[in-house]
Image 1: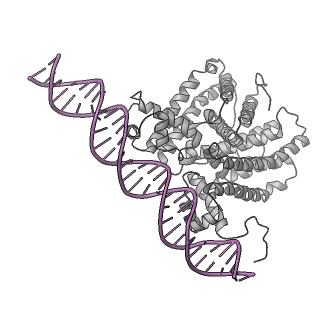
Image 2: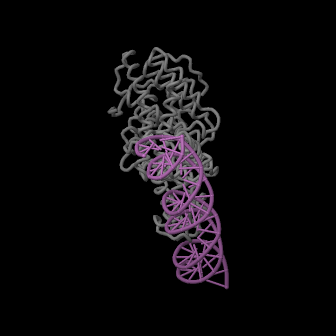
Length: 214
Length: 214
DNA sequence: GACGGCATACCAACTGGTTGGTATGTCTGT
DNA sequence: ACAGACATACCAACCAGTTGGTATGCCGTC
């Protein structure tokens, strides 16, 4: 154990396990229905440990949103599409990557902050803004690729890179709702296909490589 | 009145007021965070009345989803775009109509079943399927217009009318999440604009009439 | 057309279990 | 010795659901 770890959470123990538990339990049951006791049980710690690290349940939610951002940022930063040359390929590759993630149980591929903000947007301002930061921050990474792609491919349009990046997040979040409602990822995949086709049309690129089986 | 009444709303009094209260309170606070007492207070009835009409809180949620379908079906059936001749105009008119609804408080224009299904999809199967029925039923109405438009405009495509109708709902649901996260409808409007543009591109129609101010 | 029988619609008070949070103690590394 | 990291025991508030009651309208019978 070295003096100071650069990690935001210096103790590898209870705090980290609680954050991981929050991510998995809240995605499955929602925020309000998730109890502190259940979080502790899932994390394998006691209630005393919980309130040692987080002053309130709401504070955990805010921390979990940041934790979620870190997890997802690392995940997408490590994905191979980021090394493609053409920024448009990176944008489309991002979508292919996201589509490929729709595997297994619904609770395992849906978005924590999208779930939380629906419950908390009006009653818990700090949770709302933490979720907003997570979504907007993620969108901003895609936005820069979009902006580059617009330059490279000389697209002059009435829409902005920012609005398209947010639209992409909207489609993904909506796709998760469809998956939750229908209990399967099929409709979500088809929705991502539509989004990909839209972007191809915007950039006047003939469709390639995507597997069409809507 | 006969012994068994399975009518959706047999009594005009407490039951109806409870359903209306459910629609407004759950949209603002989410399902789990909404208490029976609060519903009763909002509806101006007592707890006894609540459990007279609904065996459990979950049963109210299922009934509220159906109530929501009835409300929205009536609302969209009465909208003027439905009388347009060209089915493609009806599809685009539907989107314009939905965009125009994004006014006032976020809780007043978001979707009840989209909110509920996020919390209940895994823990309350009956609520999930009621929400699915509401979303899918609504999508089916748009789907028939899309199918007609594809015929009329001789669009032969890799995608189906069903998948596009569901995609439209995904965008709308995702737009609501953006609105909740950002506390304003601006991003949601821009997302609907993107969806409209996509459909115009699919049907090779030059953009007209839409106000572009993304 | 008065009456009893009965179902529906609602009300007010209560309950048992749950929940977020606290008070206080203990262990460990330095 | 001392501070941070946990554990144990506990509580007051809250919550879904229950209990037992009343008011009212309907329907067949005499």
